Image (cartoon, rainbow, N blue to C red; front, side, top):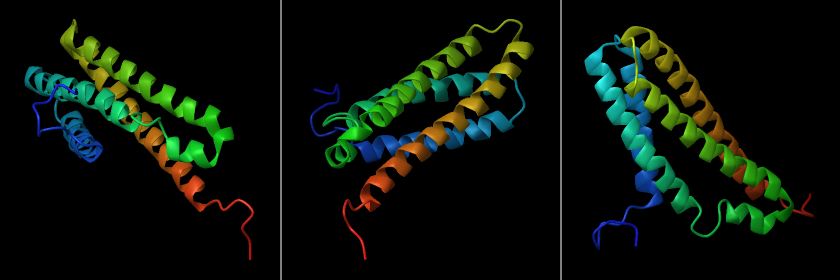
Length: 148
C-alpha cells in the first residue's frame, strides 16, 4: 500500500512531473523579494518537495535503484550506490534548509542565506539528475564486445 486510495496510485512519471513543476515554482519564488509571504510560499513548496522526492526515490527503487544498469554492468554498483546515497543526502539537506527557513530569526538575515543555499541545492539536484541520466545513457550505449 502506498497511502493513496485505490485507483489513485501515483506513477514515477507523476512524481517527476510534480518535481519539475515545484522546482520551477521554487526558482520563481527565489527571484521574488524576500518577505513573509514569499517565505510562506517557499515553505509550502519545500514541504511538497520533501513529500515528493522520497516517494520518487521509492518508486525508482521498487525493483532496485538503477537495476537496469546493474543488470548489464554489475561492477557499477559503487557508482549506483553513490548516486542513491547522494539523492538521500539531497533530501536531508533540503529538510535542513526548510527547517532553517521556518525557524528564522531575524527574518532578513536567515531568509537571504537560505535562499542562496536553496539555489545551491537546486544546482546539486540538477547535477545529480544529470549524473543519473548519464549513467543510464552510458549503460544503454555500451555494447560489450560490439564493434564495427
